[in-house]
Amino acid sequence: MEVITVLGDEIRGYAFVDAVSKPSEGANPYQRLDIVLDVFFERELDSVRDAMLNPDNLGIVRIMSTLNRLQSLFQIEEITEGTWFGVTFQSKEGNPPAWILGATNDYNGPIKRTNLIGMEPLPMTNSGWPKIYPYYYQYRDFQLGQLAWEKTSKDLGLSVAPCPDGKNYSVRVVDVGHANFTAIHSSRDPSSSIVGYFDVGGPVFFHHHSFPNVFLENKRVPGQGFVALSHWDFDHYSLAVTKLKSLQKLSWFAPHQSVGPNAARLQYQLGENLTLITQPSFQITTGLDLWQGNGSAKDRNNSGYVFTVSSKTKKLLLTGDVAYDMIPTQVKSNLSGLSITHHGGSGSGTPPLPTNGQGIAAVSYGIPNRYHHPDEFNLKNHNAAGWTVKPTFVTKTQRGDVWLN
Image (cartoon, one colour):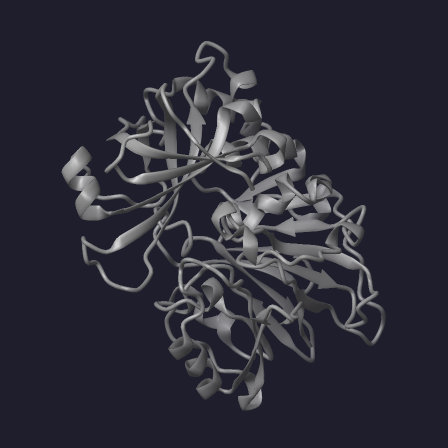
């Protein structure tokens, strides 16, 4: 992607904090943060829906700074995922660097290199939306009012391909670089039909070099099936708005969480294909179940969903970014396969034990990445628990999809 430097006029916007990451664990205020913002730029404020749906008004922004620096410049007490800020960007040496990728051209345009020169918390409504941004929640209500949260696959008329007699669903953790994307197949045969997906993400733009040079998934997306979303982080849904837009035609099941304008635009595009869920558990069809993490509603990772693929002979657990200690206890029993949570990063808690002391644990990540994933100590803990760890990336020439048998 081309990188251009912004000079001259200021760029203003309303920013939803999509992700805050540290290179290592700890709360040192002098430690550099990687902050991902989901931003609506200040244009066409008198138009409601059209402005929100116009990709020219939307973007994903990366900021690098320390909490101490942000506090001294902007009097920011803290920055947590799911909060809103008014932001201003302009080229100004010495201010925190920022990179802007617009949603135009399916997020495939040039990256604008600039600086963060203004940041202030936005006053919020009781419904959780910025007061300075009143039409935003009106826009959401327009669409979400059409959605029922307690639906079943029968109510939806959802067609999920059954497993052939004597066989089981199988899971393929897809190599997408530093992101999460998992396909559920009707059998272990690589040519078998795909019945659905758990997370359909690709790398955030500053990790785009981790994406594989050859990617054939566009030929595999079925005409019917489902997408189950763990949570609304960009790197868990982004391929649905970039390389694999046909995914939008499937039935979607996703947590009812606070989202930024880019995610809200996808929700609008999905329309009646989207079911937002709030239940502790939700069954898509027999053997395919979502389970909510026990984290606070303000913690989008740990209040997101994990996914189990179950049969009489095996049980596979796909974790998204939910820490192990936040997964309901009964969900972690009798496992024969596992996707390691949060790209193998540290701070994920104690891994569950595999049935009979052994099982396959896939871990999805890409190199290079700026988060220093995976954590080698964490992977060794999985080995010690009895898991055979299989990464989607070992070297540039040794990488690819991982099957959970």
